[in-house]
Image (cartoon, rainbow, N blue to C red; front, side):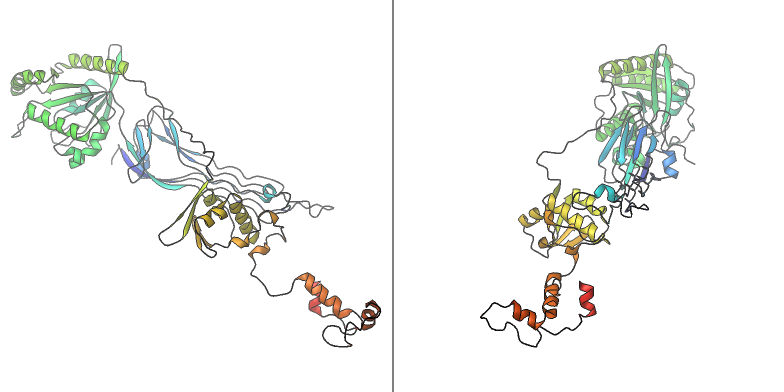
Length: 503
């Protein structure tokens, strides 16, 4: 079973917001005491936090799904729901968070560095918070907003001062085992090391970390032999140490050719040109290895490298190499700026930002993006009053005018979030709207040919009026205003049941 994982895909789900509550306060002598529905709680967010005690992404390899707590719903008597608890995920130092497409979201370096990768949903407002001077008793509440749902890729780039690079079986694992307390697997076959190994080295008052990067081969920068997974661990190192096998018996291999091949891969990978380089000619305890080291040392020094003859088996030359690495690391630390925690960037809204944008899609639908998308998610479309409230909010921020300027005609399709509407600008009364019964909105009703209440009342009054009353009401010298019978005026017949209901 693998004990080191440096790349995982994490499925993240922030908590959903709780729904607002629709409630009317009632007491013995106060049956309609006004709205008292509480707000829903906000959903918990998912946050990544750098923990120096965590060194691998192994936990997420077996548990890739994480979810924060949902917010609780509101209740009557103005009781707000509890907020969902935020979920903190501990990650190693040097973790890079990217989208599946490769876009970098955050580069987490330094203990305590934190970033929110999934924001919890807002809790919906209860009807008490939605009441105003015109809508005194709202018959609806806002729904809780769903939390963000996304996939992110976590890549671990080891944070070490010295990176050991070289061909497989060059002796890197043996070297780190004698320089530090690390105990990597060591064997006499290629690709024994499949994961990076970190060790801590002390040289008098100097302490630095060293990383054993798995062996590189030609083509590693293009992904051959898992090269990209190995190369990412030397991006943050301050010093590169070439470990060259002077006792290899493979045909076509020699120290200079190995060095050129590794340098070519480092150059192809990019971003490592400014790192100081040292060369360790390993396995000089072998007679042929020492002879070959004596032959290639002048050429390596002519290229500007500091060269050390070492042997992990006999520990020859390790003291000099350790102090040389400590010296270079110390110089690098003095010249390099101190690492800073990832900063939270706050981008305030522009003064002239309307909070939404409108564009016409290829299928002719007008797509509205921005704040209205959140409002749509929080609207209960089974409640006509809630739909009317949404329409008023859209008209208030200028969505109606913007659609008209964009060329939308009445009946045009408008998409906001996941909902699509037929735009009817004459449907909304704006500030002149007078609410009716709770949970209803007369603007949502279909047009009717039925006479209005005032017209029906006038017709009933005319039918009940006696002929002699009409005659007495007529001006003197005038003729009779109404015939003795007919539809316009009847005798003292009783009104129908439908008339009683209408009144």
